[in-house]
Image (cartoon, rainbow, N blue to C red):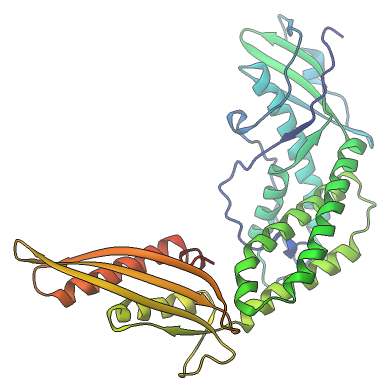
Length: 362
């Protein structure tokens, strides 16, 4: 071999696709059968988006023709996977080779999940594909080896080998550590108040998705592994998150100057599937308390207002969970009230664009 073998600690392939975290990856391999899934194409992240900790210590072999190992690369085995990459730089070619292996994993995951069970009823085959693509694009490759390199006319080729057992062992260790964290987290989660649970939900959802990514990748590397007990735990945890959101009861309090904003906030709460409670009592309810201070002035005949809005999120025990402060302005040629309403509309629009819970400080 005309080059040194080189080992990398870890290479993470980030997402090529701008996929929002739509439905949880926990929707894979659990309760309702998904039928008619399309074939998932290999995921090829751009070389510029990858972060490699490795460098080649020898120059690639100069060649006048395409190497034989490019035309007929080694066949994957139970112990290893191989990928060939071609790019304008050596580092990009290496990353392309690893991306090819990621594509192979995607094909295996597709086969494993095409007839799998889904936790969330109604998941489409398109969203299932996006979940698989997200898993493949976040795949970590450990201890990969650059087996061959060559260059011809400014084009570089690289042959990379990934050891399945090493990769599986590393992922299994990470999966076990994450499972221990999730066990502790959900034990604590069960003791929290409703509002505190909702505040914690995004972080827990991210961890659940990461756990499912580990399981899907491990399943692709070692098809014989049994994750039935972990899947049962995942389903139970997802149900806990869903139940926490459904059980939240919110009372909205506001002053006169924020009436317009509060009315629009009610609509956003409804769109977020959060239950808004009526009545004067706070008992057993979480509270969003809105107070404000308006400062007016007239400038060249125009009415101007600066509205300082303070919002507190209070749990059913009366504890303040989060606070947020917002300064908005409004202007009108007609009246102070019109200027005030404009400021209210601006604040509601900002909440809509940023996200309701984020804007509330949750």
